[in-house]
Length: 93
Image 1 (cartoon, rainbow, N blue to C red):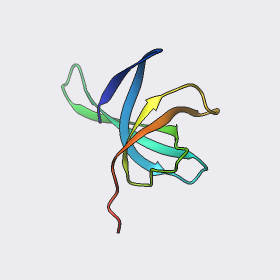
Image 2: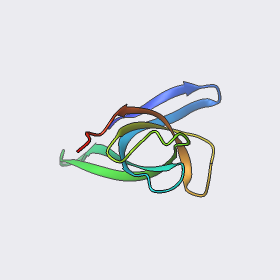
Image 3: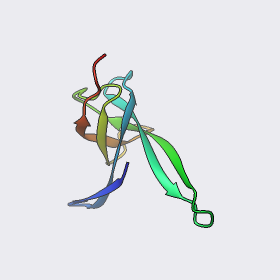
Image 4: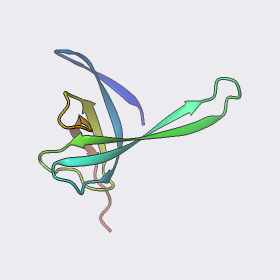
């Protein structure tokens, strides 16, 4: 649940970690990223959620997996991220 930056040839690209919540479309996964924030005044913690569409050409990720995604060039109208690695596989049940 952290924002990790990686050094690339073209500059800095953001990398995020999150859970795969959908893989129904061809070569695309939907990743839910949760960010923990602290209120400046009241010091109360809250969680923000964002969904990102990521490119997965090998279809390596499945629903429930924990993955790392990275910014890339626009692939389609809503896809600007690509799958870098599957960190943890979901428990089969």
